Image (cartoon, rainbow, N blue to C red; front, side, top):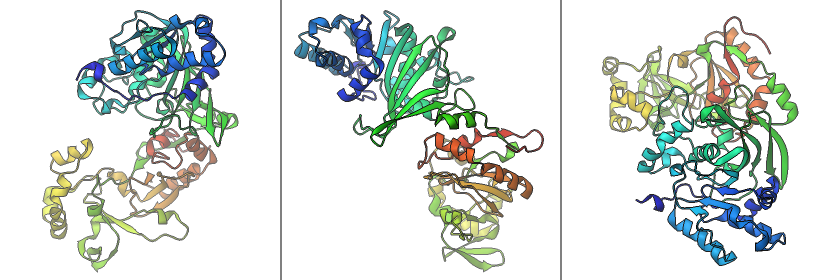
Amino acid sequence: MSDHSLKIGDIFTPKESVDFAINQFGIFDDWLAGKTIFDPTCGDGNLLFFLVEHGLDKGYSLQDLPLNNLYGNELNLSYHQKAVDRFQAAFSYDISQQISNRDIFKIETEKKYDVIFGNPPWQNFVDLPENYKTFIKPFFKKYQLIAKGKSTLLGNSRVDICALVIKKVITDHLIANGKGYFFLPLSLFLNDGAHAVFRQMSMPNDEYFAVNRIFDFKGIKAFDGIATRYGLAEFERNKTQEHPISYSIFDGGNWIEKIVSPLFHPTDPYNILEEEDYKHLKSFEKIKIPKKSFPRQGVNTCGANSIFFFDTCEEHDENHYLLNEKIVLPKQYVFPLITSKNFQSGQDQPQKWVLLPYNTNGKPIEPSQLSTTDKLDTYLNQHRETLSKRKGTMIGGWLKRGYWWACLGVGPYNYAPYKIVWQAYGKKVFHPQMFMGEWQVNQSLQAYIPCWSKEQAEEIYEKLKHPFVERYLQSLRMEGTMNWAQPGKMKKLLEEETNNLTLF
C-alpha cells in the first residue's frame, strides 16, 4: 500500500466546530493581521476552507483575505486533491503550492508558522497498519513519548497518534511562543497510562510547551460515529505548564466553567474540579497503608467465568461442595464471590461462588497436587481444551509454564482475612464495605484493599469513607464507566506506610 493511499484516524471537522475554535481563540483576527496558519494533517481542507468562509461571512471580500498565508499538509493523495479542488472551485484560488502531499513525519523543519490549527488523526498506535507502526516507532522516542527507562514503544501501546502529531508539529513547525489549536481526544488529558508522558509537555533540547485552555465537547455531537470523549485545546510553545487550567464543559445546553489539574504528580490524569474543591484536594493528605495492602483487582478468569463461577453451592459431604446441583469439588478450593447484591442492605449471603485451584500462598496448585485430587482433576480436565486456548499476554505466561488452570488477579492477598471492597464499575458514588472471611472479589466489577488484621482494616475503612475520596474520584469524570474506581486511580490517594497509620 502506498503511503499516499493511507487513511489513518481521519475525523473531518464540521463548520460549526471550526467556527467555534476561530471565535474562541481569535484565529481569524490573527490571520487577518498577517500571521501564517498551518494545518499539518488537513484532510480535504475543512479548517482552512472554513477559515476563509468565516471571513466572507463577516463581510470581507476574497481580496481582503491573506490567502497566501494559509498552509497545510495531507498524507492521503485523494484528500489532498479534494482540498486543492475546493479552493479552486469556491474561491478561484490555486492553493496547490501551499498544501503539501507528504507524511508529516517526513517533513523536516523547513518552515515555521505563527499559528498551527489542526485536527490530527485519532488512532491508537496498536491499531495502526503494521508497516506504518514500523515506520513511526522511532518518532515516539525522538519526540519524547516513551516512558523513562524504555527504549522503544511496545506493539500493544494505547498511546494515540494524535499526541505524537501535536508534539512533532509544536517542536518542528511552530515559532517560539506560537500558539497551537487542536481538536483532540480528551484521553490525552484525562486518562491514566499511555498519555502520562505526553502530559510532561516536554520537547527535545529541554524545551517545553503548555496547554492554556481546554473545551470539553461532552454535550456536542461534533463528530458523527465517534464514541471517544473529545474536545479542543490551546497550546503555547516555550511556556512552562502551570495549574490549574481553565476547562469548559458543554453540558445541558450550556458551557460550564471548571478547572483541571493533576493533584499528586504533573503527569497524573487531570482532575475536573470546582475551584473550592481544588483547594481542599490539593491539601489532601494521602492515606498511609502497608505496601502489601495496596488496592487489587479481583479474580480474572480470562473469559472462563462459566468454568470457575457457580450459581449454587450446598454441602455434599465433609470435604466437598455440590455446585450448580451437579458438580462436586473440594471445599478448600471453593469460595464465596462478592456480587452487587452483597453491597445492598441485608444481603450478606453469597449469590455466587468461585473455584480457585490455588494454594494459600497465592500460587496455582502444582500438577502433582491436581493429579491427586480426583474430583478437581476430573472437572478441570473436562475443560482443559477451553482453558488452554485462552488469549492474553499475562495468562499466556501461565499457559506456557503448564498451569492451564491458572487465573489472573490471584495471590496471597486473596487469602487475607479482611477485604475493603468497592464497586469499581458503573457507579457514581464511592461506597466501600468491609468483608470478613473467605470472600473473593470479581475483577470486572470490583476492587479491594486486603488487610491482615481487624484493627488495620477498620482504620483504613474509616479513612476511605472520608468525603474527599469520593470527590477525588468524581473529579476524574469517570462515573458510570468501567474505570470509575479501578486500583490505579485509588493508588493515587495512598502512600506506603513507614510508621503507624495517620489520620486525615
